[in-house]
Amino acid sequence: MTDLNKKTQKTSLFHIKYTLVYIILIPFINWSFTWAPMVELPGLAAWAFNPVTIVTGLVLVIRDFSQREIGHEVLIAMAMALFLTYVTSGGALALASGIAFLVSELIDYAVFTLTKYTLSTRVLLSSAIAAPIDTTAFLYGASFIRDAQFTIPNVVMSVGGKMVGAVIIWWLIRQKFEKHNIQKT
Image (cartoon, rainbow, N blue to C red; front, side):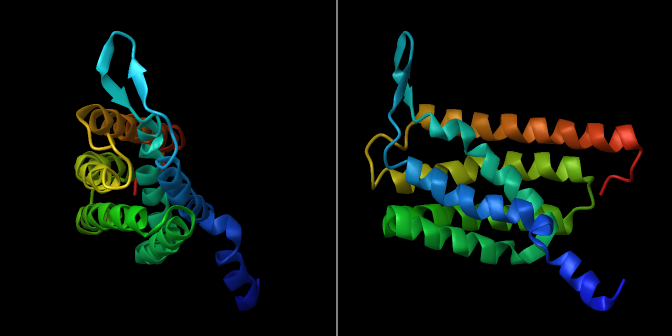
């Protein structure tokens, strides 16, 4: 294989699939906070939450895989996604999301760069540390755009959703590595 073919193979869209999903997922989820209805749990009217908070965990997990694909350039992907958020949902939401992601990215950077844990452990650990901080920062900022976003139910459902996603990915990674008896990195 020639050097040109190797370079083309490394930079094909297939090799940055998680990064592309990450760039699209951020503005989609942010935009959904501008219109998604609040859902009340039966018998618990005080526990109204935005249903999108449940799927926000995808972003943290996808970010972990994007960071594996492109390393620290994941910050460029985040900037692109925040620009798309600005275009689709406005500057205030982009700022709230940007602050939350910046904090989350710094935590993720520390876990993935400074620790030598297995990949599955790093995914779970970075989500466990980042999810409460990221969620609190974002929902606080989102509350300036739309009422009733920074609530205990929204924080609990968002962190819970993020951790369910992280645990599923953790389990899948462990199964894949154990099944194939591959070095966990």
